[in-house]
Length: 575
Ligand code: SF4
Image (cartoon, rainbow, N blue to C red; front, side):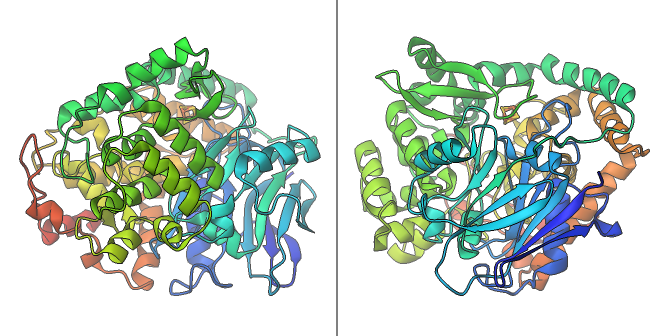
């Protein structure tokens, strides 16, 4: 069965199945969502209007047994940044969509009435159904109800109340193998789905499966690939402490933004660290090692139970713990876990919302360190959609504008995540130049600047940082197209067997003969496509800049400022 494009028009409630155009055929995941958005979405359209489109795509290897290949890409013009956006997630949906023969699902148009719908995807196409039962429900209740209604094995991509309210930080939540949630967190794609009147998408592949052109070659490549992943020391640390292994490491580097980016180290770092979390999880009989989709061999996820030993959250990531913890000066891991649970239930990005609350703390809305106050803001303000809640749900930039705060850590209106660019300069280049607004995952220079992966580069020196970020952004764009989790990058950077095995997997899947150069060129062309969309939307080089306060305020303990000139940053695009 050849893969097809499934298209849904929410204006006239029609659906079609289309042959994949030749120019889209070599793309998957982010490469495909960005190619389609660039081809079909007017760059200056309103992100919540009828001309924006939400594109959902599995990666090139999703649905196969390839290790770590179950990431789902979602793309649109972002209501948060106004740029092109791709946000990806684990969960079961990428693998199930691929088994439906769906190369991409495009949701376009907008219903005229206030009616809510669900979309049911099978190998036969998409049906549009009116939805009432789960409207207004939090994500956890909705997933439970839908698992009962549809059966536990179906994939679900849903929005929570934040997406229904079209908050600009609303995310898309994706059901994982345990019936919990993963998130396409960044950029407000949940608001785009809400603007289409779609509450959830269910995916039932029936007996569908993904065809592999050369199974023997595929099996051999997968064995070598999986071995490279599990042998890498960073994979092993992730499998033991999760991504939260980074709290102590980044604190030590002086790059752990604290109290709305006024300090680079947090006195409460030990209490919120991966090591402390690991011990608490074990005491409470949670799970320290867990995967977000079938076939992951790294297993960075975990299940965190509360003090009553009841499930609270999973996939409890460093960036969320940093944002709710150090950035808000909260050192109580149970408060942070409760907040993470509330954010998951509302369906809103934990990084954006917590950084927004950090800015609100600076404005005096509540005090830094007030964990109970943070929970109250999420429950009584954001959850109820009050005026203040909608400002916070609009992200850090909205809070800064509403309260007249000048220290607002955003690029292209998206909150800067968990690494201070003054102390770790490579990541500052990524924040400035990323086509998606500030996003560490677009070019994770922490690997080389701090972890010594792919070589070493002094994080406090400007030397080589533009090249490092550029190379990683090109590689990331390609990896995001395969359906692979980004954490394969550590092995890919250090182990000479990893990347060839990944290319062999793609070649065996499709019966083609890609080379390493082809993969690099794919990454470059994706970045250029995304950049061209942004330029056509009205962005210029002047938008590739960090907020002024990073150049004016030295951050302890290194007492350094951001000191790249605009001209130096602009050399990024010379490729
Ligand atoms: S390493 Fe973590 S994020 Fe990546 S696929 Fe596994 S559980 Fe998911």
